[in-house]
Image (cartoon, rainbow, N blue to C red; front, side):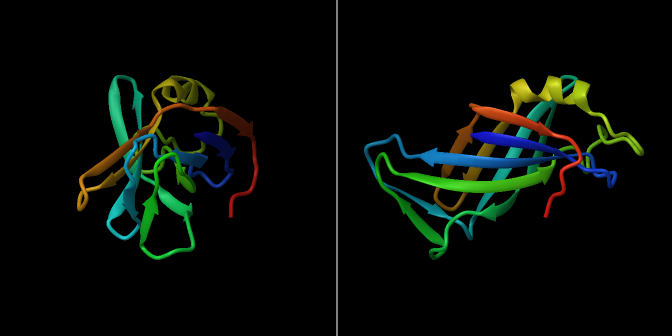
Length: 137
């Protein structure tokens, strides 16, 4: 999972852009369903677990159902203002370096589809880039 941190000046706090590569390591084909599934980011800050739903920016151009054969990969791009809606976000604060150093080791992305009882947990960060004041669209 690649993660790119983008710092915004608009008071929403740090923005994370996740570029996740999901690989089916089982010997069976699995069926991912974009209409009944959700992606979440979870992290720990000051011994409290935070879980927020991610905005899926790019997944695939196919139907809602996406079969993933054994050893096949799919690239999923998601984003979130990581502290928005939490008590971590402070008004007029621009530097969240201390908070980010604490949450990064605990950060994980989850795919949850209750209709098919599939739950994938992605917790291996390959690359984190810090880009201060980069615009997000």
